[in-house]
Image (cartoon, rainbow over all chains, first blue to last red; front, top):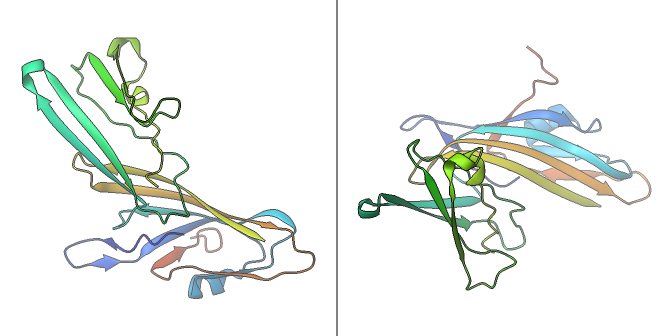
Length: 151
Length: 58
């Protein structure tokens, strides 16, 4: 599990992050794990689940940092959004998939997508196209984009 | 013996990129090809506490 550091409640109040266990291997000594944070087990042959868990809240550290930039171009009645992603994982690790969803104001009628880093295109080539908002079921799903790890 | 950690992270960000809510669903799996009884010990960071609803139902 990556180090997410501690979540901050108030000005100086810091509480420890809470891990909620949803499944744990039957050979794990649970009280020992709760106390020492050591998962001690005797795995069976083949594939098995050691631990399934959930973390919720606000952490100081995520493996990915997003840098959105909004620029209003009023002369064209346009709003430009540039989204940059910075992967903070060590080089031997990678993001398997990244999906970004964002909302646009209701009065927006067209969305232009300027895509980069497409696998089937040369690195220097980019594609720009537009689509009527009314012709797509969900602007949020259309705006989903898959971005490769920055590594 | 291979240990794999997979996490699905869902986060909501403000327009300037700060995360305001984060949900992590993680799973640690093991593929064991060693004959006989083998012991595996994994030390996690200790800056979190464990809420164990499964074993300590309220």
